[in-house]
Structures are given as structure tokens and as C-alpha cells.
Length: 136
Image (cartoon, rainbow, N blue to C red; front, side, top):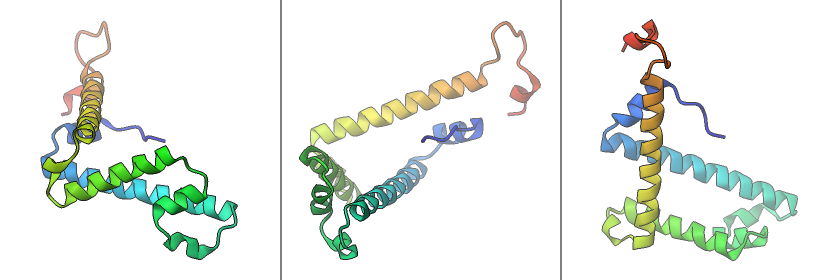
């Protein structure tokens, strides 16, 4: 579940450098992978698959716990995209992946910008902003 962002976190995100954004994205990717792996292991345990099963290729493990081929293919597309980006060859990303990444980045930026505007805007009908808005 997403956590509520503070005004400071929103401002930091809007003012972040490219390197800071990449660091944040890398942290999110690691966290997402850890969560995915935990979920996959739980499913394997529920099905009674042996512990050594976690050494098998991820696609095989996903199929063994009943995930659809579409989900397996989608994950592989993103894993390949991450590898391409990390190797410094982002210009080689397929167009459909570039478009999805651009749409995600745009949506995140617009959402953060709208939220920042809401946080910074004084309540309607108030001529002057309350003191908490002045301490910036």
C-alpha cells in the first residue's frame, strides 16, 4: 500500500536531480523484486514445493505456482528492460517499453506536482495562507 507523502517528500521529488531519481528508482526496483520474491516463495511453500525449487529460473517457478504465461512474459520484458538500462544502452529499448516508461514517469510527475500544488495552496476563502505555509 502506498504511503502518504509529506510536503517535504513531494518537494524533494520535484527538485530531485537525475541521479537522485535514478537512485530512488533503483531502490524501488530492489524493493519490488524483494516483495515479488517473497510472494513467490510463499506460493511455493503453500504448494509444498521443496526449498531447492527457488534455485530454478524465475519463469519456471512462476509457471509452477500457476501464474499465467502473459504474466511471465510481462515480467521478462521488464527484467530485460532493466538490464538494458543498467548496461547504459537505453537507446536499445523497444518502443513499447519506452512508451510505458514515459507514461509512468509522466503520471508520477504530474501526480506529485498536483499534490504539491494542493499542499501549497491555502484553503479556499482564506485571504492569507496560514502560518505553516509561511515557513518554507
